[in-house]
Length: 349
Ligand code: AMP
Ligand code: MN
Ligand code: MN
Image (cartoon, rainbow, N blue to C red):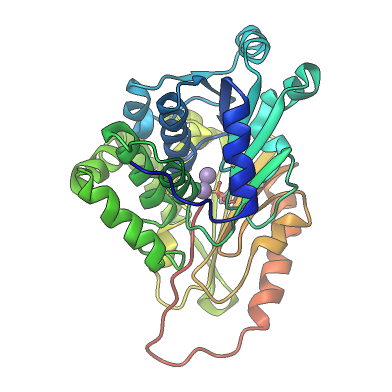
């Protein structure tokens, strides 16, 4: 395949960054989602196609649903010793799908110690641009969109592993082409990947038919207790440590839960307060399209996209609610009435 002209000066700088370095380490945010893992696996293929050596190391384990993607491009999980080895070996770090340095978890400390060159490829709005090269394009539906375009620009082959990985990133971040970030660019990318051999139905089955029964019971409990607030415009969900323990689940198992109440007619926003360990609350917010909720969490140190954002808070669930819900309700109170028969789309990670 022939190379294309890089779309922006930052992308040209990233291609130069790749040319200049040889031993790459890739990482992404804690509790990785489909876009995080998919972007890493595809980026690893890009680098390998260019003759680079590549390792992938994340703070958190790969969720079961995406583990098959790592079969040909192993995704390693943090230990202090492994991180020391991988940082010592590498001359460059590429961080994918991550808006700030803290979000890579325990790997963040190693960056200072090793004075490694850092590049970022991301699509979050809230960003501290912590790389020496930053390809940050919030207009992209997924980080995988950027990796796909970078592969086309580099002129490398998109093999079956890369194509599946890119499809997973794109499909999961667009809620399988249902959210408001599903633009023509995303659909063209999907078509390109299907033309390259991706079996969309098969990939979708692989990532959505992996749940243990306990996860559905856990969802059932959480959904049975959902609260409707603000005249039915706001749904609040809570899950506590005892529920995670009872069903044998971890924090990543809430994936998808916050998206379900979008199905309720008239809902504008959803808030999930997930306390995996006592005193640590992960807040996930979603908008179905009319309110931009990222500001509610960015002022507390979190971030994300206008229609999908999150933050980690210390304290009880009651304290977390107190810090989030009044601000969300204030935003909802500013909304003009909706014309009958219209519904919005929202967005995800
Ligand atoms: P989640 O609710 O975890 O699915 O995340 C929704 C979106 O918000 C994703 O784009 C995340 O990367 C982003 N996000 C979630 N938690 C945080 C956080 N603590 N800091 C910054 N961004 C976050
Ligand atoms: Mn993403
Ligand atoms: Mn993500």
